[in-house]
Length: 103
Image 1 (tube, rainbow, N blue to C red):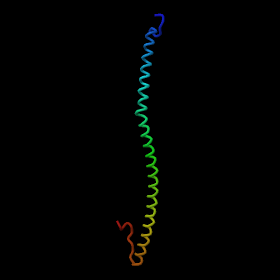
Image 2 (cartoon, rainbow, N blue to C red; image 1 turned 135 degrees about the horizontal axis):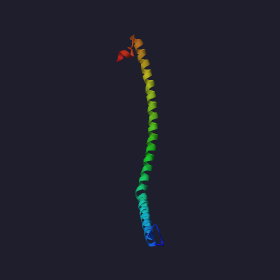
Image 3 (tube, rainbow, N blue to C red; image 1 turned 120 degrees about the vertical axis):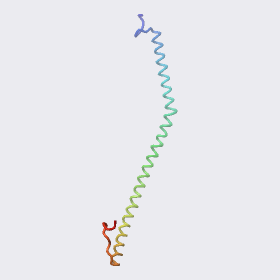
Image 4 (cartoon, rainbow, N blue to C red; image 1 turned 120 degrees about the horizontal axis):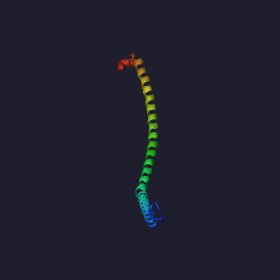
């Protein structure tokens, strides 16, 4: 066979090329439709999820700061109460128990 490549005639090469082209085109269209019908909505949902997580993170940080402020105010109030209780004990003439004795 003088006219051919890899031991195939020109007609057989054209047939192999056609089959390869058809398989390539089929896979391309399948992947493109997958991207349009499945991947695009999934990507949109992932974007919405990412935005929701960012908003949640910002809200969480704000709430954390608010809780820290409230705890600081409670610490101050507890300190004031401790001083007032100490004043009451000294006014009445009692002595406070040590921390080891309270438990």
